[in-house]
Image 1 (cartoon, rainbow, N blue to C red):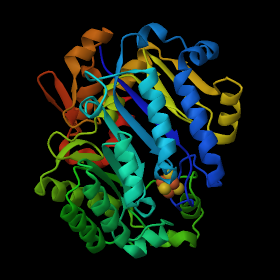
Image 2: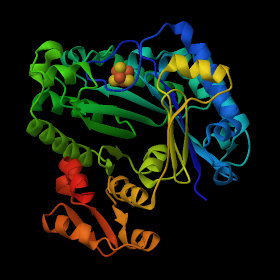
Image 3: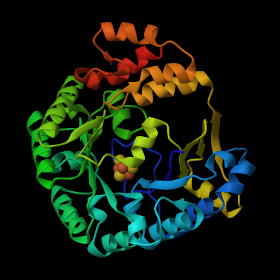
Length: 399
Ligand code: SF4
């Protein structure tokens, strides 16, 4: 039986980054405690709340133990550490934890990640996170270049990154993940190389590299789409430059000892994100909080995004489910392909053909002929040289 992952969404930030297309908001810190209470209540009462909301997964959940927790956002490190501890306590008291007993040894059986922004970290907070069981911190660094960080509307500067990593290491965090964005305004091949070099000097255990997304969901995206100049919209690197930056990252990270295991993710051996692997492998996870998504036994559902509405609903012992889908066989098969192929090891095509009683060669062969996919026996994977155009490959594959 696969182990269960738990995701908690904390949809609060200090400001809105110009490129951000997430459902997050800037709210008074007075809202943090009621939000943590609502999430804890959702965790403790999930079984009854799901029944009332028409999500039938009790049998599938029976006997599962939790082996990963991811507290993401937003900026969860803005919360008082007591709020983080409160939510983790609710999980421990509600679910069986993978491991043999309570205490530090059992805690290490569960990967517990907290997303953090560098400027929000101090030694007391970091110590409190570790005391409550956090053993992995994921940093939204995005760049080591202050001009790029300022244009992106980030609150931290290069110096904050070094200060925060030193605090975490001193506190005993042995698993640090960092994110970079290829495509920020003012980025050049030279500044990108500099960010990659500085990242390598910090030796994080895990690295994610994302390409800047331009869409109507962000202030920057809207400005680019209408041809304006606010938010340094005219200083965004071209798509070709972004693809070249991604390829530079591939080479640089490989040469500095990282294993490329998913389109956007690299890890030192043994430090692949246990939690995020569940998304690509279609393993079960429960999401708690406003806008959080869950997946168990073919059911995908998501809570409503508005944090105030979410808190109000939980105070009334009601779960505000905004979407709930029971996947059809065809949708599940498509997920197997476009989620599974994000992993560089590829997918076991023969197993998928057996599980779904289908033949996939008519989908794979044309893409293999174009050099976009590779087939080695039962394993099909994206061609390593085509990862920067993976979205186009997925569109073709699902056509
Ligand atoms: S910190 Fe992250 S979630 Fe918050 S506004 Fe910036 S990009 Fe969005």
